[in-house]
Amino acid sequence: MKPAVMVIGGGQAGLATGFYLRRAGLVPGEDFVILDAADRPGGAWARMWPTLRTFSPTQYSSLPGWMMPPWTQDSGYPLAAHVVDYLTRYEQRYELAVRRNVSVRSVTRGDHGLLRVTSDRGEWLAEQVVSATGTWSRPFVPAYPGTFGGRQLHTAQYRQASDFTGERVLIVGGGNSAAQILAEVSRVAETTWATLRPPRFLPDDVDGRALFEIATRRHRARQLGEPDKGGVSGLGDIVMVDSVREARDRDVLHARKPFAQLVERGVRWDDGSESSFDTIIWCTGFRPALGHLTALGLRGPEGRIPTNGTQAVKESRLHLIGYGDWTGPASATLIGAGRTARELIRSLSIE
Ligand code: FAD
Image (cartoon, rainbow, N blue to C red; front, side, top):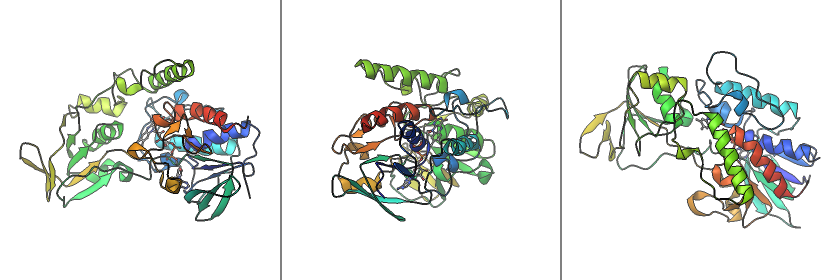
């Protein structure tokens, strides 16, 4: 079988790409094929902890074509399961024919100007490849000297606060995951928060709406060739969802600088003092899952593949979406994935 386009990854970025491919007249499962390693829909959202809330209301968390249904269960923003349900139905609605349980091992240059996609379930030759594998499968933990004898886990393994009841827990990281996990774990455990730089809280009224507006502004600036004034990170990092506000009211949102090293029972701080912990939760982010593209030899600085928009600079048949702002403004968010996918389709020259 020789589809025109192979899409690797069926999370929100792969689905948004599928939407526009279909709209361009390509037939799902024939002219383009979406492969996904997971056994169920939802991408990373299906793996996040159940109490995770999006930081944006539903009308600012939608993929192209069909709005996310409103969240009516409480006054807050949707839980991760609502996003999974939306992505599941989105995939069905547009009959995107995602092939599941197919893990792509490599993309290489084949004969006749085609790219070869090799998976654990077979091989495809394609004219163009879209990589939309996200970051969830590559949790990042910074290296520290020393060894800690207690329990350690990453955001990717976190499930619920009750797993830490009565413990002394160190939470490392200054982003939204750290703040939301700290907010709930601090209700049942004695928590300490360590961040590289002082945490930067967004104003209470800034949420996904602002992200959307800033992404729109950046998109227009790019189109008009004007300077890019940067993303929402200029304002701060942490969205004040209800649970984080509540933690602020309980006065637990105090961070200290990271420790100097790990020790058997905990950590040693810069001033030489030590603290004991039962558990360390590393909320230290993810890296792009690009291992399947290694053989193409395209890696640039910071483990990224240099792109022009979404197109790889040194391999015009390869397109990347959803990994971060370097693959399109806000392309790693629900609201940004659609716009990036639309641009990506233009660079495929199939419309
Ligand atoms: P993913 O959702 O990770 O999907 C990638 C897919 O590729 C997966 O299904 C995986 O199985 C598949 N795959 C990976 N490798 C292979 C391979 N080799 N072969 C075949 N398939 C493969 N965004 C918002 O808009 N609002 C929020 O509130 C928000 N909160 C977030 C909270 C957290 C804790 C995190 C981590 C992210 C949050 N995001 C939020 C960001 C963003 O929406 C997600 O990271 C999003 O899941 C990225 O979508 P994706 O499709 O690029 O990747």
